[in-house]
Image (cartoon, rainbow, N blue to C red; front, side, top):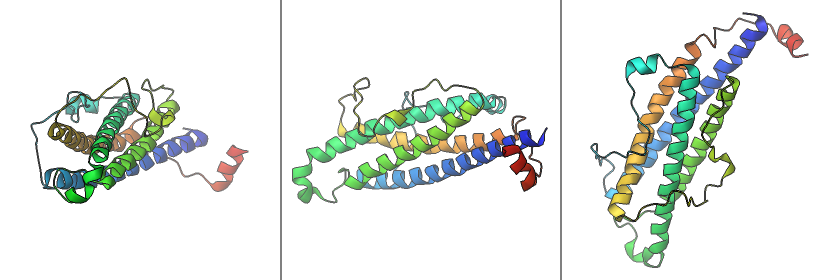
Length: 225
């Protein structure tokens, strides 16, 4: 490849490397929030309910052969869609926690520390995770554009974190079920981010991004003039 093309490829590889680091960092934060969520709402940070699934969440596993033969744009397009889906679920769960918090505001002193009561910092943790996912989605969509592929999913970047979605009302179920939904969302998000990290490890090894050549600073400067 020409020196300029290799430089462009090198920058693309760096972009994927940065996204890999961000994905791993978000996964670590999700693990922390999940542990605190289980402790506060179920009284046990080791709580597990492996059989419970949500059909509206993306699949966290894929067959090895399917994964191996996916193209870069397919991986990124799927990541854009799946991250959007998790963001939307986090938004609904955050709103649910805030409603519970507001409903028990007058009795907060009497119920402080009691199992099953969502704490204010838990709501803020969901907001922080949504901001992290929003940043990662922005990177994914930018990478899609660099491959001349347009993401078909609507990004939440134009919406505030505190907007209420009227198109997806949360069904009225017991508080226990709502808490279980939040647990599954966080659990599957952590698993999905592990899979996404593997995608980012695989992408730079494809022909789109060949190993970079060593380019002198003077040559780079001449190319940029």
